[in-house]
Image (cartoon, rainbow, N blue to C red; front, side, top):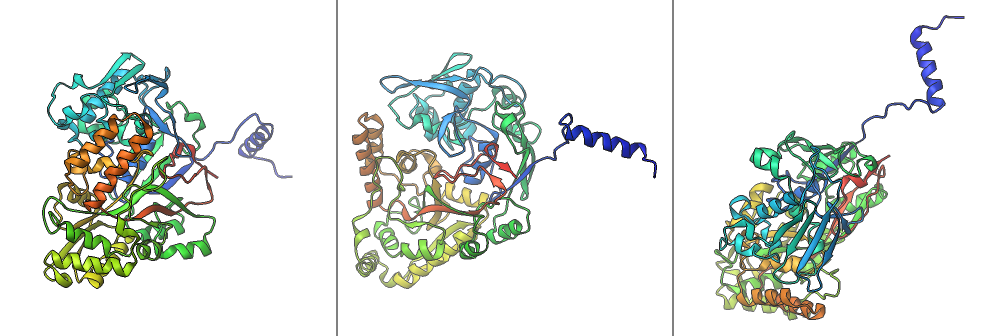
Length: 534
């Protein structure tokens, strides 16, 4: 009988030890590959505005309040909180064992510094500061009326307790703090590193993962944050967020096994996926609206309400939602989507007219505006690189041409260029918009139409009466009356055709059956630390 070598004898012994449970075999690193649509514009939460950025930030940072595996909010960096009887003071108690990824404690001083940074126009250009305006002096600081940041209504009661003093009650304030663009950031390394803080190796995180790589037009790689309180429960060691703007290319990568999830799915492939990958296909409603924003600051549609109304009336939303988008979207004439507790989205009166009557009125309005049969009217429609948005844009342009005689120039822009064009209003016609609410309250949509929110106002809408309604709603403590004021504001914006709603959003994507823990929810939130890969 052949004599066993030392290596063979060692392997035999190890096999016996493993069988006896005395030694565990080393496990391979578990890596998740997520399709993430466009290249992220930034990883700075206070500057980010897009969904591709949000999905990464959910993994890197936690808010005082966090979103769980089902999208619902609950304790995050804060383990508990209280709200005063008058609704004006919110007190949050940080977890006593909460630490940043570098091991330093997460303190009330970090939280205070972070929110001062958020509202400081010199540091964040007011990108997301309007969310924070319920807090005392936040708006005045953003608008430059107060320059002393210590006047912001956020204070450290002690090292682990933070209090927010509001100017008016805001019933949505607690849930709003789960929004990924309102997360606290670590004071010391950010002040020391400046913009370099957001580079791999420098970023200090509070979420389930830390930044390992950021390769432009390729991917962002995150690895597990071993100092997170739930690190032992996380089953994914590393996650790649792959930038793939072309959905057909993303589908090919998924089918080749390069991705475990897609960011979206080409509408033309949904029927194929139902037949061939039924266990992978996920279609879920979102708390969001797809709409067109006319530029009201300059160009073809500024000061021309009859033209805007004609364009809106000429759209066949049933066709755009059900035959073009094809991903479970629902045609809509409302800016605020359904699903807000106690709220009924508003619709213009003409939404219930027969289609022939709507088209006749649209043509009449266009003729009154000096463009009979669309004569002399050419529009610019801008959208970001995506097969979904291209299809909808082409169909929209076709409807305006066929029904009104209006010619439309389509402008397909790369994501970062597109966001800049929307903010600076360099387009002369309409821009594609789609927004999923940060929290389930109508205010999250309506506040974007305030005249004083700056470049994030999608159309540059400026109506003092609309602003006053939102102010009154913010001061109203009766819940039913508050919602009635918000409904009045939405109806006013729709009457002004400040936006052109098209359909309620839904997300169609592929998720590998190997991915467990993926729960569809209206906010479309699935943080990696709640997932596992079998």
